[in-house]
Each structure stands twice: as C-alpha cells, then as structure tokens.
Length: 195
View (cartoon, rainbow, N blue to C red):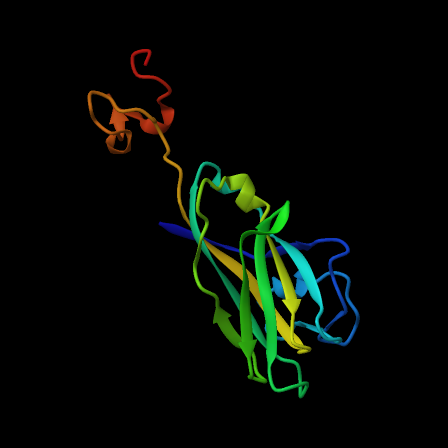
C-alpha cells in the first residue's frame, strides 16, 4: 500500500473566524501558513472558540485507486501564556459535508513549543471514490476558550493504486502477472485476440 500527503490548498470562503498570522495581522485565508512546511509561520485564534475550513490538495493523479484510511497530523502549541492548554477539534469531510469521513478528533497540548501530533487512523469505509478524496476538507474548531498556534496541518492517505496495463486474465493467468504478450508491453495492449 502507498501513501500520499495532502496539505491545505485553499481556504473555504467565509469560513475563517478571528485568526491572525505570526505577525499579528488578521487573516481571511489560513492555508498559506498551514501548508508551507515552515514552523516560523503560524496562525492563531485571537478570540476564543473560533474555526476555519480548508480544502486539501488535488488527488486526480490517483484516479481508480482504492482509498483505505487516513491520519490527520498537526504541528501546534498553546498560544503564548494564554491558558494552561490548547484544544481544538478536527472534522474531515468531502466538498459536501465536513463530517463525511469522521470526527471530531480532539487535539490537546500544554506545550508552549511546537508539538507534532497525529490522530488515530480512520478507515474510509464503503466505496470512496477519487473524487470524494479529491474534495477533502478539514474543519478546525478551537474549543474550551483556548487559544492555539497552528503551524502545519495535513492528512496522510493510505491507498492501493489502481491496476495498470491489460485488465483481463488470459488463459487463466491473472492480468497482474502478464508483463508482455509476444513482446508487447501490457500498457500497449488494448485487446488480446478480440477479447
């Protein structure tokens, strides 16, 4: 099985509460700081119990894959001396709902330095298509009147790649075991004797 890391690629318009960036400027989008793989940039909620929704990277290159499970990972800390901990909930969904794939998962830290934490693995369950995964969104809601610094937020998706090459058995030989037919690569075989 293979994995792919999906990072925030855009912020859902109108979903951002009262957040500021590391310079103290109010922001309307959150994905730029959350996907840059840089712990010197971050966002924080400057009032309690705020939220936002981000869309994740395009997965169109995984067309036909079987999606097995995913894990949410965050790098975060409590904001300054504001309270004894930082706590927020994460919900994962597709483009039509923020809870399609489960949640909430709750993340908590008492650390005042960046901490990397991964949630529990969640099975997709049922038949999840590449278009469902391509439209994945993460909803983050700070809770319990805490303030959180978020440095990074991403999802690691476990998947099984789609079969490639010729897709049918020939004389009881599975298609996965057919590399060539009389010297022709499987990727170039459309039919075998009209089958």
